[in-house]
Amino acid sequence: MMSSLCESESSNVTCCFSLNQTEKQEFRAIWIATVFNIDWPSSSMISVTQQQTELLNILNMMERLNMNAVIFQVRPAGDALYASTLEPWSIYLTGNHGVPPSPLWDPLTFIVDEAHKRNIEVHAWINPYSARLSSATYELASNHMAKRFATYAYSYANQIWMDPGSSEIQDFICQVVEDIINRYAVDGIHMDDYFYPYSDGTEFPDHATYTRFQEQGGTLNLNDWRRSNVNSLVYSLNRRIHTIRPKVKFGISPFGIWKNGFPPSITGLSSYDSLFCDSRL
Image 1 (cartoon, rainbow, N blue to C red):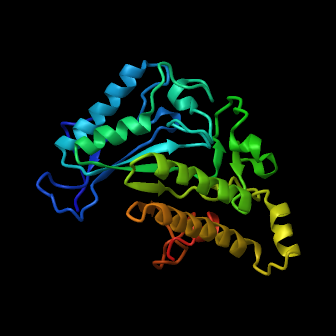
Image 2 (image 1 turned 60 degrees about the vertical axis):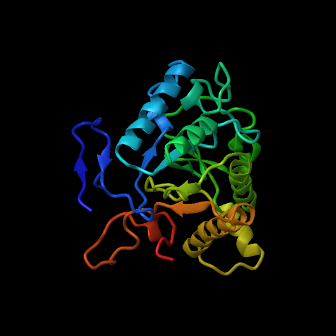
Image 3 (image 1 turned 60 degrees about the horizontal axis):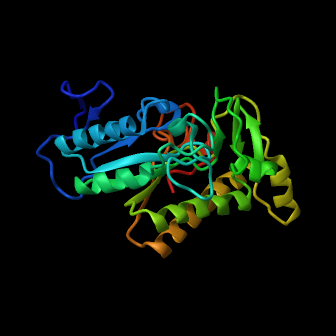
């Protein structure tokens, strides 16, 4: 479909559909990125009422444009933009990592209720392994996964990143997702391409985990082992999600280049070799 910028809407909204397209099989969605307050909330310092108004404005715009799904980032960095007993409240919502909003409210409950009134699906978007992103300097809350599983929390590329090779970390991420689908009427779970981090030119420091894999009889080389870790998480999430709620959708938006040379002449940072995600599977 042709992509054009809607002059009637804000400049960061791209419409890839025409207003008369209503076939149910079409997925006409937007992402709402909460990390660094990219899309919502505009600031963690505004009031709860203002945050809710901003969400309603987005949903009302979607309804006018005949969109049918929102991919809402609820877990940008091992934190929560919803009432979680497993992870701390997000600094991008409240301005203080681990501190609940005041007055207390639950953005995920709010957006699910309001979106469903408008026949819009809500897909809860999580980033599995990022624990604290570049340029962030806040102190992590005591219940943050990088504190609870400190052995598998690595400083890399000015970030804190959890080890995808740890079965404990994989299981914890599955628990987080199970908690979401058990308590919220979300229509889907979404992940983007952040499994292993983008390289800063140095080696990701997971050699202790890989060595244990080898000591236990594992024969995969390092890169294949990393890809198998990504596959393991995706498989486990898919199985556990659909065991609980078979109709919940589960999707991943992969990196643009699967592998260099596919198609011919394509070169650059690839999902397969750089992020260790075999997105063509």
